[in-house]
Length: 213
Image (cartoon, rainbow, N blue to C red; front, side, top):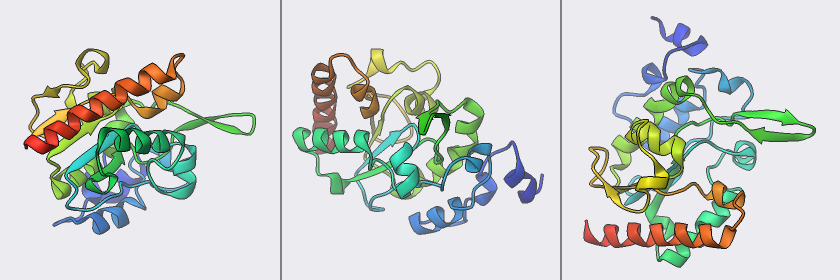
């Protein structure tokens, strides 16, 4: 299997990950990724953002409309909600690295709007080497998958955020792994205040775990 055939089709981004990766090298390599078809409709690759020495890594599903346009993760409505929740939980955003399981925006048109579509497992698998690269470089003390897609991508398809959120789970990916809901789910909730308070409580658990590692 040649690198070109990988770029054209149905495998993973693994051959594109640079040896001895750094975050700038990973970001540069990922900019031209065509390991799945999402590059055809996404404006650009949206790689993670934060310091290489970040103590916490937050992993969401995929960039949204605003992120796709700006090329930065968590800058849309869900990102602003996350910023507010982090502040309430006493977590300095500068301590965090934020990224997504999938680096391109998957969407379907509805009039003039671009509506989010959930990535499938082949797209998640194709993109996984980029996430593995970020984990290997950052080496977060606390890893926080947000939402079912990210949590199941990292912890297995049997993982249920509704069942296991807000408490440490065993994983080799980081010393502490605590899953929570994706901020975008709160924006769609009937009782936003209750769901938001739940996210803040989960993040307070993350803050305590960070202090104990």
